[in-house]
Amino acid sequence: MDLSEGKGKGTSASNPCGTDSGEMQQESNKKMSDMLWRPWDSLPPELLELIFNHCPLHDKLMIQSVCKSWNKVTASPFVWQKIDMLEWSKNRDPATLNRMLLRLFNNLCSGLGPPKRLLIHGVSDLTFPLITASAENLTTLKIPWSVISNEMVIQEATKLSSLRFLDLSYCRHIGAPAMRAVGRHCRLLTGFRRIVHKNVRLGDYDDEAYAIAATMRQLRSLELHYLNFSSQLCVC
Image (tube, rainbow, N blue to C red; front, side, top):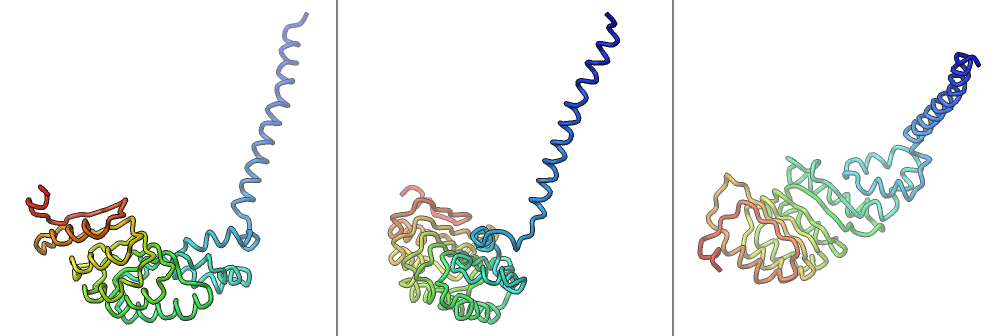
């Protein structure tokens, strides 16, 4: 028996397997490439709604003019349930924010229902009433670096009864009166965040802590950063 012949046959028998494996890998890569390059206008409307809902507001405004199918998708109320204006609103003056919120609530969301989540930077006493006027379904409100006053929060807190999470970080012009108003009227609140700048010392925050403890009884998540508390409060 010629062993070399047997080896040759064994080698030749293994080559087709290697060829099949390579072809399968190429086919798999092609399918993956086709998936990655699939035209977005052919995606199901339900999937586009889910994607668009997580886009920042300025992207949603641009999406409307891309094509007819996308414009039709943005007519769904689901797309406007989450409004993320955090990046866009940084360093914007109150008048610009006011115009954008008016456009949002009066035009874009007309007939679509108010949002459930609103994230916006630098709210003032001028713009805060625009938010609370459309807050009947609002469950999450994040307004860091806002310049709202205690008086404005007290005035508008009754309209925020649906809130479940509130972020009032870096809001230097509010204190215990605002916390009490939020706690008394936002009875569904389960999450609260209050961060102050570590380099800005405005005295102790004992009154805020007492207000939160006395009125926000349903909290499951509480984030307090860089707030100065007295030793007497810590003992309590």
